[in-house]
Image (cartoon, rainbow, N blue to C red; front, top):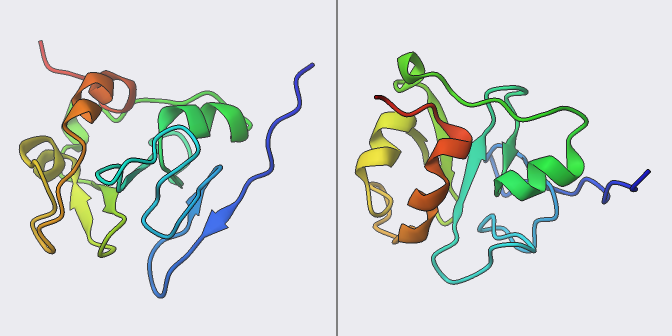
Length: 120
């Protein structure tokens, strides 16, 4: 049996807490920590924010679930730079935070299917 890493919590001000192996207040983690890796995803299964799918896999005590297409209006993406919560629809259309202008990692699009059900 493999041991799960300790759950770390990062909360800056009034921001939601972010769980997993987080390395800074901008929600970067041990898996993704470039300048533009500044989002956390609220997971549909537990309602908790994690920086990435690997953080959830390594530290949560349950399997991840995708957000259904019908939930696109739910706030489920956190900008780690300013703390703004974006709806799934707004995040999927954005290249950066509409509130602070910080760029998001474009390569996160490769993992969209891990967090959100895709249409079609």
